[in-house]
Length: 210
Image (cartoon, rainbow, N blue to C red; front, side, top):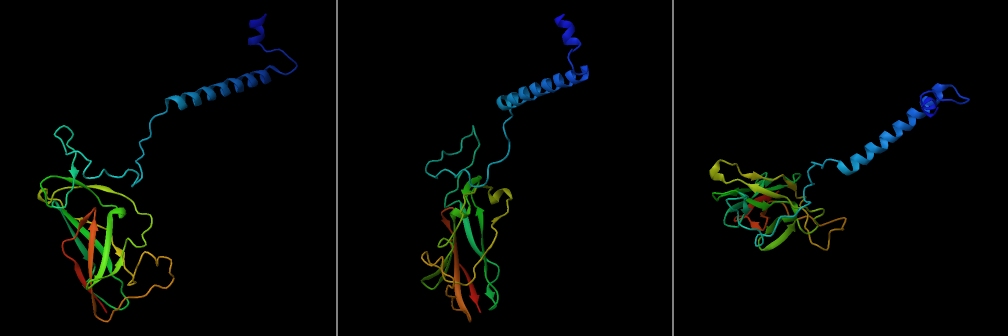
């Protein structure tokens, strides 16, 4: 009698109504089981971490590369040449200098250097006076460890994107100022020095502001 009522639903409603209700219950139970399985057996995400999530190890703490791992060591100052670069050596009165850098691994092995904005310093000087420094009012600085292949392997120099210097003086206590003083132009000479990952450019890059 019980098996008969399961196969042929009885009640005031037509049999099709009871079958639809049972089907809905079964589908609901299947969805719940599938959600539980996904929670406990979901695959690991292979999305990359954002740049700057993990800071590189300090040079003194990072182990030397081993034949077992083959991982590159940290670049030292004698292995990398940093050069300051401007997009011109002379600027008209309505043109702002574009500042950048290049670096070359002069060693015979790859090495890793933090080239992120947190480890970049652009400094503009005139004579012995510091006129402008990128660190004075920098925001949202990030780390970016980069493996640099040696030039002896045929690798080209690493080239940074450029930043614009708007000819203003800078200081750490004037970042919120609405009207910062402009530097002297009219043929005045300035020099750019760059530091990347703690390694400074050996020479400065001279340019003229007209």
